[in-house]
Image 1: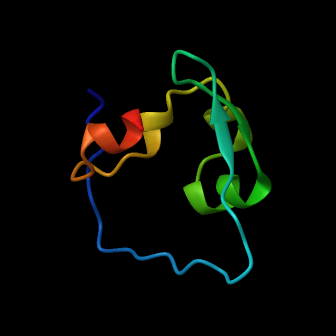
Image 2: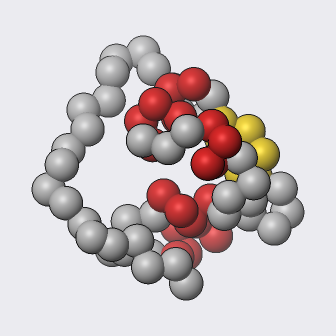
Length: 68
């Protein structure tokens, strides 16, 4: 499992009417991310595409949530 550290106390307030959208291949690698997803993630599109979806998982988020 990826170790996503350090955790900060930074909070990002989502904009009303904006939707985060991404999709993955069968191995869980990101193959699409909309512009708002890219913006909120803090990564570039090049860093996200092909990366495992769990690159964004908070360490306190149970893996089962991503399995769904």
